Length: 131
Image 1 (cartoon, rainbow, N blue to C red):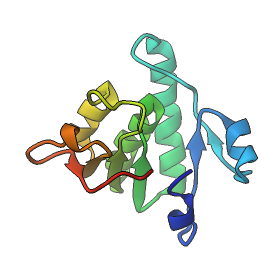
Image 2 (spheres, one colour):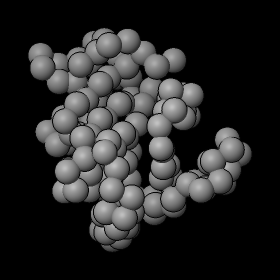
Image 3 (cartoon, one colour):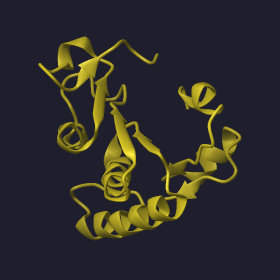
Image 4 (cartoon, one colour):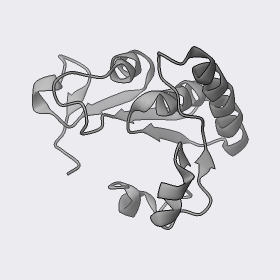
């Protein structure tokens, strides 16, 4: 949501695992994705299929994820459909990159970290914090 003000100038679609939280922030047309993680493989498979469907239907030019498995699934779906992809780590992982962060470094076109000590030689890059 911290990026919303910047993104509102574009034709933007939001995908979330929590539609109620999106509505509380004035996003009434957010697309629901199932929550998933490495410990819930069937949920992850369902989320991947839904992400591919959602991204294929929307045909975005750019897919941005701020972390977590559902967002990573959208990054992969974006790559499959030819979208540029950007992963921005969440502020939740200040000690090390999350598993999705480590995967995004390999799959996303661009990766940014909000923690200077987590920047890599090439990726992820540190350009400052969102907060």
